[in-house]
Length: 407
Figure 1 (cartoon, rainbow, N blue to C red):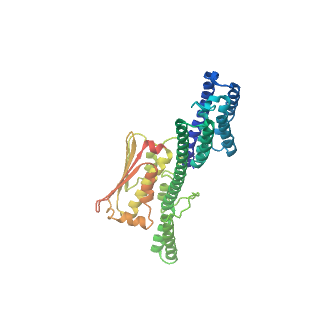
Figure 2: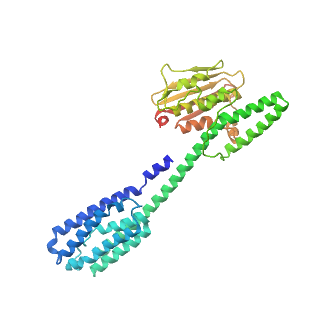
Figure 3: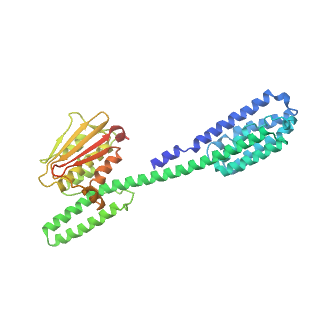
């Protein structure tokens, strides 16, 4: 999924591995320069020179190993820690006064990079183990450790454990976020499928039930069966058991054209190209003897997917007018365009919606408002406001911000 891939790219681990790579290079250069400036203090400079030469080659050769968690294997971590500990223990051999003076070891702060690799790879437990080995090596190298030595050892131990713990928490948070995004994506896909079912299959079943009841005879039995299937399908959709994979289907509905326009775009034209399409061309087919369309003089351009969904929401609102406002009800569509958003208002002169009716309909699995209108606008990043006064009609205002709709 796109959302999950984005989470992986945003992973907190990768910046830490890049930082560790830079840390190892810089600290290796620091150790070499420190030896170059203080070479005269070493009784056996050749020991220090040999180790630092090996350290430089090891650091350069193992840079790909610390590029990511997959490359940083357990054998490498053990070998890297061995190099750090060996360098610490070789310090008295190269500089006999190192045990009496709190000077730097041969690898200096490069050794902390090995501990940090353990922390990033395995968390705080691995960090505690690695830092313990480094701490013991430092205490052995000093023979008579001073307060500063103990302070530095304790600081590395605590810091590495803290970093390891933070990495573990970050990983757990990423897993939770990835799972939440998967659930959200599945829920949105389920809602889109539920809208398609409402705009096509459910309306066909409702029409068959009404026509069959009116015709009587065998048609009445067919209407009864269609009504039972409508109730069963509404229950399935509202209970969240709709599968998340969308299958291709042929949209059809009462009267054929009305529902087809709602589900696939009112004009029946292909608007799936990358170029913005004029919302007016998608809404114009809704006009008729009882539907008035007021539009701006200039094209109202939106991304094709956003325009189709917005037109489908308008179609769902008009379908509700036809089904609930009465045969003589009139409706008006008003399109307004601002620099930042597109506003479409659908108003009718019907009896209005009784208080509490929308909540009751949603509980019964009737998704005309909850999914076909509100759900569509929510997915577009917009808002849908429904205003209804009993006896004075209903007004649905759909607002789509241009930036969010384009995304």
